[in-house]
Image (cartoon, rainbow, N blue to C red):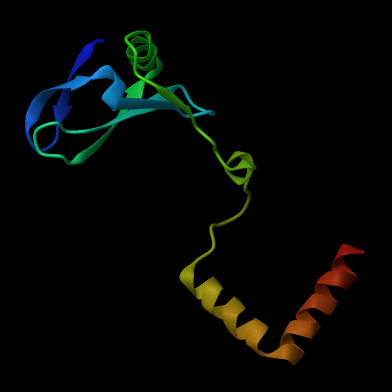
Length: 112
């Protein structure tokens, strides 16, 4: 079993057994993460790293998780992001049945 030398944000450099570390790869990017619990202070550590390092960690016995990215994260988004004011306006709209029905009717006319 391999031992990996890696930084802990609390303790500094520590030695972690390969099977005590978990590696994951971001499905849409060329980077990954490795996670472990520090053997000295028991804090959970998560570090972003490149694909080359991910490959080396897996070769040395670190288990790898398949990263399940929600399909929504791959969608193309256009326009400005939704603001808190937008959410408040929407909340008020759906609380008023008449305004809500009028808005739905207007959107239905526009879409057809």
